[in-house]
Length: 227
Image 1 (cartoon, rainbow, N blue to C red):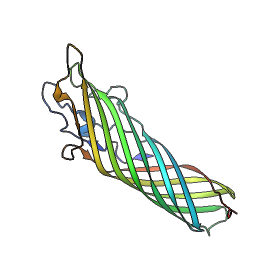
Image 2: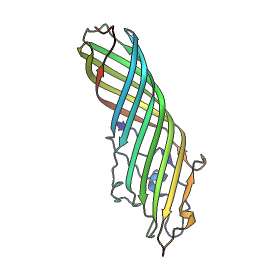
Image 3: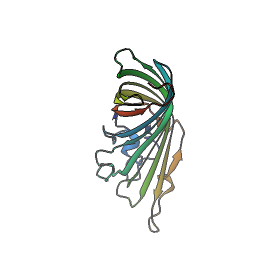
Image 4: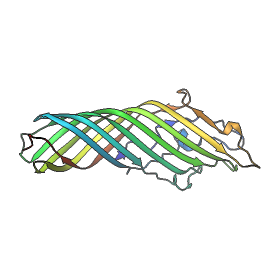
């Protein structure tokens, strides 16, 4: 999978105040200045469908995506000391698929359109400026995902096939939430202004994003009509 942009889909540059000798408390992830997500996320997709005609099938799909982190976001080697950053996406929905079944008995190319729901979460830690305060961030994103896929079934047996698949998905943001929790110690308590939890759309932007993906699938076909 290849994200079209490595920027976080949740932006909130004004989540926390500036000044206090520490600059922008919100950090580079929430302002979009730091694009932490690499071009090699791991994805796993499961589908189950019903082929009601030789050329058509419908069904449901579920996907898990884990975005890899680049630029020191997992180790703290970033300009704003972002560390322990991780991002996971769960999404699922329905699809319709059209098979070009007349090209070859064992090779069935197909095209698929899908529609579903995406739940995208990320978290990270940073230390603003030279303060002894640690801030833990939790970002939540919800959206509607659409996708188009093209694949090729290579039928090795009547019930078993493998093949390549490529496609593009686009997620349209519905809502975003940002939670910043500041932690200090007994001698240096965290100021209340260093923490905030909000889903206010005037503060938190839920941006749309796209992903280009490709892979290999394995399919098992069951039923009394399998030939």
